[in-house]
Image 1 (cartoon, helix red, strand yellow):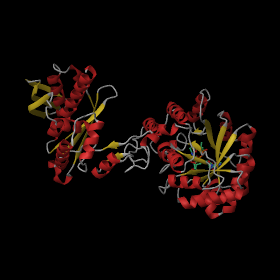
Image 2 (image 1 turned 90 degrees about the horizontal axis):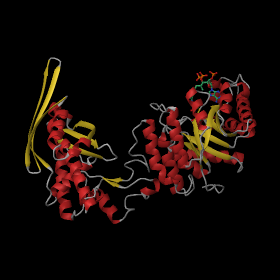
Image 3 (image 1 turned 135 degrees about the vertical axis):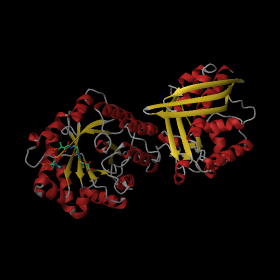
Image 4 (image 1 turned 45 degrees about the vertical axis):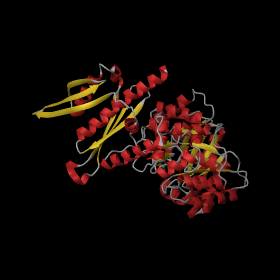
Length: 534
Ligand SMILES: CC(=O)SCCNC(=O)CCNC(=O)[C@H](O)C(C)(C)COP(=O)(O)OP(=O)(O)OC[C@H]1O[C@@H](n2cnc3c(N)ncnc32)[C@H](O)[C@@H]1OP(=O)(O)O
Ligand SMILES: CC(=O)C(=O)O
């Protein structure tokens, strides 16, 4: 690590600008403000809000952002150097930067001969003037300026002299940080580190070097960490790695690496534990599914599935984890499956609040889970079915209801479709016979079951199906394949649970998942009531 390395690395978040260049993301102004507030709470140093000269939405974001109080972060307006034909003060895009009213602006300029000659179609000298004059103009308007050297690494590989001259022009204009961008994302960590060191050597210790890396080689995070290790003091990236093409360096991984591995500060003390929540929040607002396997903050980042791992984790928390998940706000979880041993079951039962599970019962549960997974069930995402499986093997468990038989009928006459289900249950020792119609067979079964249970458990009204997923397991068996049904449930509050059924008959698989859903909700509610009144 460089001797001149400060203890604090500046985090520059571009989730709202470069992250907005992700295919599939389209933030509203309100989305942007909500994300910005969350990033401010997290404690990043800069939030790049957008390009005010690009579209009315980004301009409105800055108008709204000006009215708010930002505790930790500076809001940054992004734009380009002036165009060849304009003076800075005449270029509408540069004017929009000034009008955005932020204390800090970030502008990008070309660093490579190819980009200047082929893309800007201007001269190398004019590009240097565009960079210096734009930075100087913004400085004259009272702005702090961060300079992004676009395509810096490509430019430096082909013509280091010219690439350094471009940075020099920004420095001369008054930029406070010179940011080296791997715009095409094609460089590897040791190449990035070597270039950072060459730039530092060229400018000397008084000049602040930053980095902005894209993930086209899958090395965006690794290269960012290598660059910081080599002496960069400012890093740009996005939450969840959103960004153009393959994305930007993922700050949810870069930040913990800075704090926990390089032992440097990136966020205010104690704020790292907010990262998991921020990652989930941004995914939700961006309307993208969170990546479960994301390092540090992913749902599976500290999930243990293999029996050997879970057994070892019970003996020592460091056995299969490189950090304590709480440091980033995440948590350790145990996954139950055919790869489980007793330890998974004991751990999962504790997690689910089930007590009194000894090794003998644990072994019985493991055996049953392995047999059921062989039949097509999968318990990884169906924790309510796991809880019931444990309860059913526990001495003295009395199910709240038991199915005696069911019949389903579906028909189509011309355009008219019909579905009807008949079920026979015992509920609290009484036999109940119920018939219901539905707009499909699942709806008919569900309606019949609700009607049958309602006189005994009126709270079934709150139980709602949230998602119903079907998967064919052995597709080479065609329509005779085993079907797995996974149902997600909620009760209108925060409470959510998932159940599974499987078999060659899709309606039977559905029935198993459906019945588990009601039995779990009612059993857990009854157990909770007992605990509360005890
Ligand atoms: C690496 C990056 O991610 S940089 C950020 C990229 N982000 C975006 O492009 C998103 C927002 N962009 C936009 O809304 C539009 O592209 C605008 C408003 C900026 C420009 O729109 P238009 O004027 O219609 O131009 P268009 O998009 O077709 O072409 C880009 C222009 O920018 C110019 N340009 C590109 N880089 C630079 C630069 N560093 N400095 C000055 N001008 C530049 C190009 O030369 C071209 O202008 P020209 O046609 O006069 O030569
Ligand atoms: C500036 C920028 O976004 C880039 O060069 O990738």
